[in-house]
Image (cartoon, rainbow, N blue to C red; front, side, top):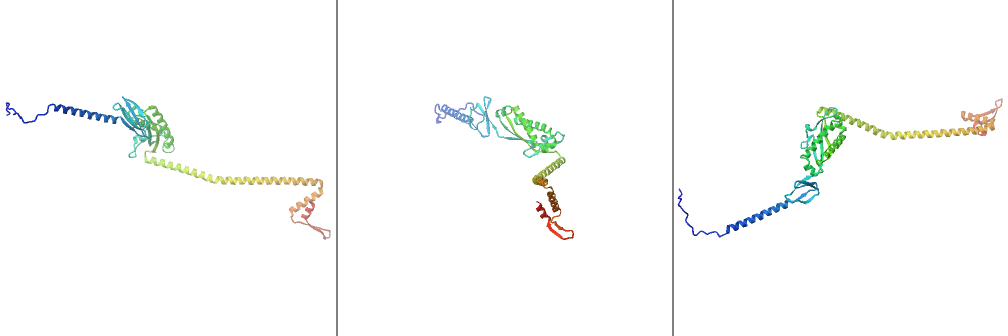
Length: 328
């Protein structure tokens, strides 16, 4: 047990601390701590007052909770601890509807739809959008991208339900895409969530079963075959039509030439007849004899006329053509 009356002996050789030393050390340490704290606060305030906006970014600055947008890129300053900055990517982004973009697998809950002729079809879409109002994008709604996708799915199903399955799978894709884009763009602008629809495209459209898909492929092949036949027919027509037109033109030209020839011949015959008639009026007998000789020359070319007396003695021989020339 300890002795309560025990006392430590005095140690006269132990050194004594100088008078006032602990207080000065505390003051120096305190001043140094304040200086370091002030330096740290100054550095933090300096870094908190500078921010950089990229080329494809916009920034939304809030001052005491009131937001406003800064759209220029580069180095900017703000009031530290009073203003805050939220950057927004302004590039075009995409949303896959109906399939998983990481695995490219179909999502029946999004892709399976019913057409106007009560057929089922799987349709995959890819929606492109961008931010046009950073303030509205950040503060007008909690999840603007989810709102955009939900509205897109609604208008997609509504529009697909207005078309028959054949149009959805084959010929009507462009019209369907355009109609959905117009409806969705108008609705998103009315919602005021800071987004803009850039484009929406059908990635794939096919029936939900292999049997129906095979039937549609056969129909599509038949349509392509019909289109090929029409194109070949048009090609043949294009090749044959110029030759036929040239042949018809040649026939027309020959007919025109024959017509002109017949007309000229008729005019000549009329002129010869009128001239002969004028001679006939003047010399009827000679003209009749001449016409007789000309007719005989046409009927019997090279005919020779022999004149004899009653006993068979030839008195004269001459060619009918000579007589015709003499008559002329």
